[in-house]
Length: 404
Image 1 (cartoon, rainbow, N blue to C red):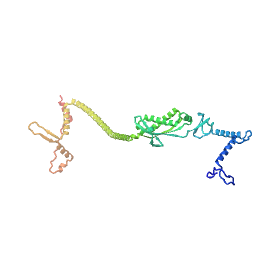
Image 2 (image 1 turned 90 degrees about the horizontal axis):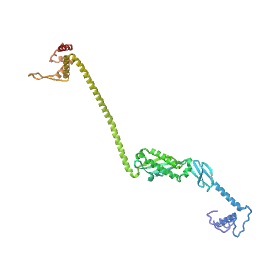
Image 3 (image 1 turned 90 degrees about the vertical axis):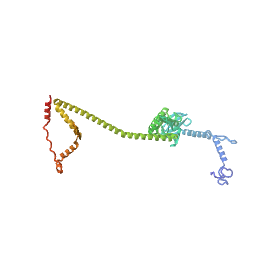
Image 4 (image 1 turned 180 degrees about the vertical axis):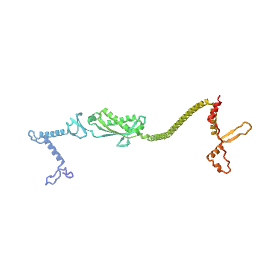
């Protein structure tokens, strides 16, 4: 029948092949026919009609048994359930744990006697603390703001991934009323404890990996203590920064710290340049002083040794020794003096003897004796004086003769 037929649901007229009205039957008539057949099936007596004649085991009891059998089959079939790989089935008897089943087609007593729960132990669950929807810009300050050990406030946004332990699916369902919410509270509590024991500078720039590792260990300890059946897979610090309200002031403080570090590095570089030079100069002065000390000591020892030798000779010939000492002393004096003043007793004038000029002339003549002969008008060189026959032996003999 067509729902768009204008005569659908209308009575009257012939509905046979040759009738004038070939539309669908009336709804009221259909409903009456259905009620009549249902009454006949359950043996109900219609008013004004005779009860149907049925033999023993007729349609009345046969229909009820068939319906009961179908209902029983459907009820028993509702006890079948499938547990796929990576899941665990928990069977409950009147709400109490009965057994735990693995993967495969399973059957239990139908409801309300038994029921079952499916726990996925292979799926990795994730928690977002301090942000939402995988976007760190969507901050949740109530979860992210934490107090550090140096009494500063830092905003930490981190993610936690966890799975249900395959052997503890029962604990995941029954030990805690809301295990996922418990996991979030445990993650936030563990991270706050770790941040409370850390310095702000370390959290922002240095020890984020250590913070995540310590928080991971502490979260797992909390879940094991509470028996939630949860295993923490990973803890990742997504973002750590000062609160937005003090971000500008914190940037100024960071710049000041950077300037301080730069000046310290410059000072250290200057010290590395100056200190080695100063140490080298000090070492050189010490070595020079040590050399001077050794020289003075050696000179003093040599003078003492020479004095002892002179004393021994003086004890043998005092006069000769005195004269020799006088001659040596005068030689040293005249060697370092270029001018000599002679003062005579009496009315004579002071004589000046230019030894430097005489030495220069003597040196020139000794270097080139033929130069004077080539110069016209130059005086002839004077003959060299003859050496006196005095010798050291003669002086020594005379000194011995003068000795009393």
